[in-house]
Picture 1 (tube, one colour):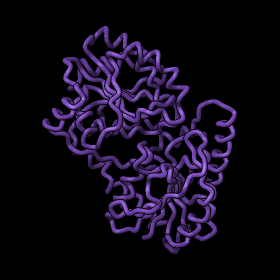
Picture 2 (cartoon, rainbow, N blue to C red; picture 1 turned 90 degrees about the horizontal axis):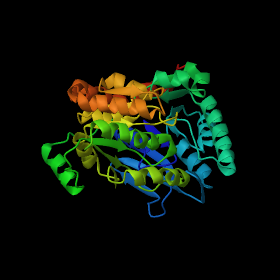
Picture 3 (cartoon, rainbow, N blue to C red; picture 1 turned 120 degrees about the vertical axis):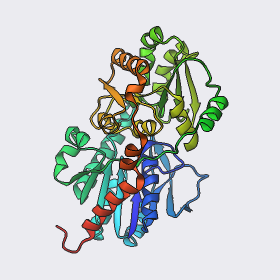
Picture 4 (cartoon, helix red, strand yellow; picture 1 turned 135 degrees about the horizontal axis):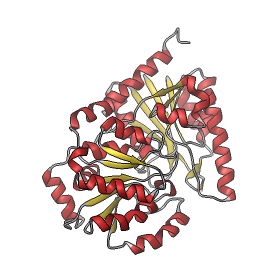
Length: 385
């Protein structure tokens, strides 16, 4: 099957969405499908066309940016050309161009599968309000035109004001998740490289510096954590630059300064280093605050490395700990509850650790790609309804 997958950002951009699509695309290609990625050339140093381990990547030039979004004047031409030469279109939202892409799928009689990753939240300003309105309109059109909508969990779909309107065509498929098995040597090398051999427990956090990540609540929880575990410290993995989040970074700065000896950023790491990072942490924390977080793949990645997670009880996000049985959930924006749960896991960590094999099986990219494949085949069947 010739599959066209469209999204705004693709690798090497680092986000949960880009990692999800990269894993899915390569798993589908490994199953014998011809896979093309249609995305933005968000960095002019990136090639316009390339083959990434069997996956074709087509990047469209960017004329201008609006916060985290991009404007690509030639996206329509590329979309028309590619939709005509592929059997099925898979859109990944949020995406400003979703409506035009879905319309082409409908006009050219190609099934459209829309994967809805999260709601969109931009920093407050009039320009961002206009951009949010335009993107929301594009999303509504695309959702209406799509044959099927995929989301990570039924839990999120039931609670989403957007997806609840389209429940009849929503299918829940968990995200594809894999991570190398960390070894004692890889962990030792990682700790040595980043000077992480302090005696106290490491509290890990992974993600961009963005308002929806709730980093301030972990910082506000630090006094209570340090009262019980004085040698504890936080290690933060993720992009250092707050893309479109400079105001949030400015507000965060005083808290980070207060705990500069207890909170370290180590930037973007390799996949192997990420595994060693998780294995080196006593607990991983996901303090997200809104529906831009709908699952939290890092929770499963941490579990695969033997590390439990404390996450917020957001729709969808709270499902990961149920599936792995390796963590606790707390109310969003509640620093006291977050501190208590982190201390509980630190004090009784062995009670929150489960075998890797079953977790790995249910989230394996090939397992998830097979579920997508079955959905694609049903949509292409001549007698489909």
